[in-house]
View 1: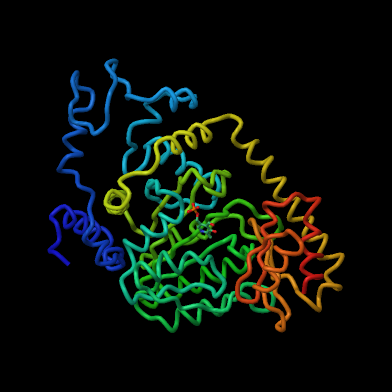
View 2: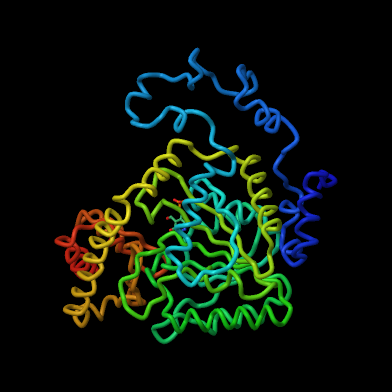
Length: 428
Ligand SMILES: Cc1ncc(COP(=O)(O)O)c(C=O)c1O
């Protein structure tokens, strides 16, 4: 790699002096990246508000507003300035602040200093930028053996890491010991990926499991391992059972130990039912990390984004910001969450009623949250064949992976859920 740019060095020094562990957790790319404050962007920023501003790479109308096509503008009921110009690589500042407030509100036990969330182009991009900043070729990422398949492309394919998996479930609960065993087998640099509610199983930790995992991670940190914990909170907030952890693991890890860097990857995608908007966030916390250190991480993230997609969609960010500031937001969300919960309850009811009959064909993996649940097929059955037959003979689409059928109850009306389970049974 080329020698380090002085602007990157400046950030590395801030991190090194304030929190040396975090510096050691950065990847080579992460160490080398910086947000270019001294070039074109700073010249454009300096010209802001001048009577003639001929710096910006956009077109302005004669009245100073963004030049725009009526065919687009007339369809969007927002100030053109909130739509057409570029947003900052870090995201709209007010949105970042509003999302930070949301994080604290949704995680009441979180008291730690956290970075301002940096806007990413959805969670996938947030995960990708996390890999950019913290993963080198050959690094190991510890995660359960049932996970969102796109992690393979994002992390393994693009950044050359290897996955160290542990069996997800043990005795119908989370295999907390499996995680601990992988930690013990991976001394030094440890990268843990946690995803609750889990895709594909729809499982979230019980309160006791969350405490046990926290203790294992703390113990590992106390032994001197440097741990980066990435929390993929895509489906945050949709928990349907008592005794299940409703807060993010981020709240537990944010201020736990100097050797733990907590990275929260979340966004409006699933939480706010805005999948195609591509609004996600990356937020950092670590015990002992000062505002300056956290800001340096924001700057590195801003630089990674600038070098990657330049910035995320301004319109989407503005719409999410409007929603967060709206008086209706909480009620609107509660209404949708209630629909999701009713579908979850219906699936539980179907399984309670007919689970005995289905047993020879499939059993449900534990689930208590999120969008999905999984059927574990009898070992003689092939998930892919069943998926295809469901499409051809029953007009029903599901996802098939490694002996599992994933049912997205999130997208099926209550009245039609039973058809899915009956169809899998019949087809099998
Ligand atoms: C666990 C998990 N993480 C991340 C994502 C990606 O979210 P986004 O669409 O915001 O990139 C998904 C989407 O399916 C997911 O299931």
